[in-house]
Image 1 (spheres, rainbow, N blue to C red):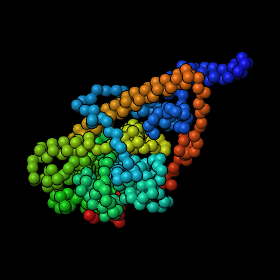
Image 2: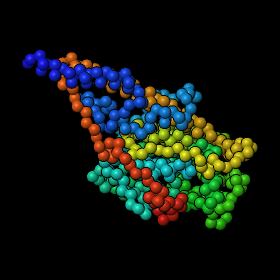
Image 3: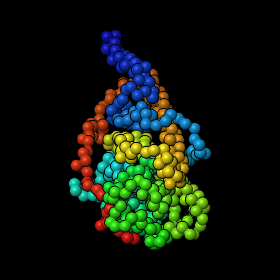
Image 4: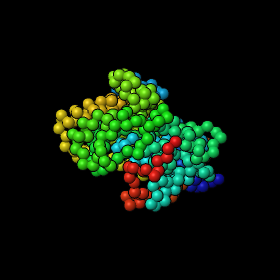
Length: 434
């Protein structure tokens, strides 16, 4: 090989090397200023190994950090096991996600994300005008999701933890012949207790009811004496906030604790089984324990963090980003300080649960982010080491290729409200007794 040929070969190699060195200065590891498309990888070494770490992530560090407080020390003694919630969810196997939908926590929006917004090999089949979607495993006639918008209210309208844990396995076995034991991953959404309470009041004021809910516990529904109704007639439309707060049997009070606790521990809805103080202590402890041991839960006030943690927990990706909407009916209610304190007193168990849930949620987010950043730094080091080896061995530089299509960061049309099935809170025709 003559000298001229050697120079011709050396020039492009040096040019590529110069570009790569420059890139490391302009876009150092962990930087948000430069992004590859999802399929821009070097042959022989992937920039990021996990499917959810592709650089077409639609949120950036600022998106995740702007919707919450800065790093704060935990008030509770959470272990690393409490913070690490990644599960090996096998959508092709026997795993099932069970969504516990608590009223007025943003569950309808989140439920729609589950059936319409997850990037899947076999997406849920959602037909216009139908309330439910078919969410089957790839190549199978089996459901991987148990929720309002997939299986309907199969365990009763807004079934709670006590109902779901007893009902879901039975219902799934009836619907589908299953030889292997299923793995059920429970998830839910929580909301600030005062905002959630006000939202429920406004909802009931407009005429909504959940009177067809079963409230099954220890094999039966509560009697009229155990659970008196707050109103006469078909609904409680037009109720004032004062009237709403004055009903002692109003299930809006401490709803989140009641729906997450094991009610069989306190005699279900029989208030005479133990004193009130003991009952409240058991309910709160049970709700905290069940929430902590769930595969995942999100908070209405932290939509982007909720999306982030769900994706990292299940290794599933959403197609479009969650939206934080702070202008709600509850937010527009003008409260005096005395009324706010009264609502907090009526929901004192929910207030304690939410403080616990928010602390754990933010600690999980910080833990997951730190671990992900460490993994990214390690991958960058591996990338640089591999590039040095290629340079030292005199091998030709690998070419890049761009992915295409919707799965690779393509454009998605935003769904309008008219595209979604119309929903109401009372699904009498869809409630199946078990």
